[in-house]
Length: 111
Length: 118
Image 1 (cartoon, chains in turn blue, red):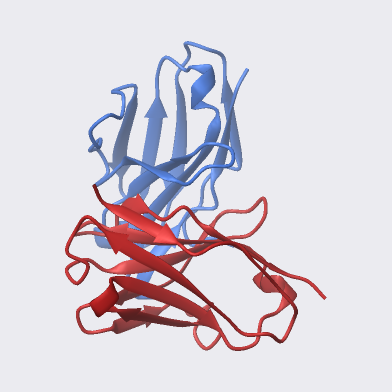
Image 2: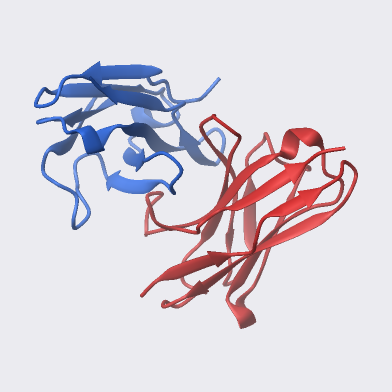
């Protein structure tokens, strides 16, 4: 059971918009700690997609965006492309655990 | 160019010991922490612990406390993850990861696959 809760899977057709939620608690997201998102393509190393809720590292398309609401965060992907098919993970810091926490991951399928 | 290069894949038997490494280059190794993350086959990412090479201050996830040892040698820009007695449940991919100033990981090692089988 992951500290951060994500839906196991989401899907969408090419060109559509999908969102992935990440729900935490008062010891992580609710305590004000940043949320970061990673994309892991099949058989590859995770890649930082969004940091500090809404910021994109250089090279990440603006089709990817992040937001926060209370003890939750969301990743939105617009204009879905086949190459977006991957696993997506949220991450934060948890004061009770004293370290990083990850969501269980969400598998995005592009129909 | 920042790089984290991990040691190669390992195949071990239950009860054996193991130490894998992660060598950093292209940046000041003693300024940034190094974390370790496990990914079991077909599963998600799990934070194991983190070390600051400057003073070897180490924090462990409660799930991994007492199960592994994290260390670092800043003189050779290398962090380590070790087991004293492997279990079959330790099978998985292990990544070293360099966070930026926060918890966001901007650089990952390529991963070390550890297989523990009788």
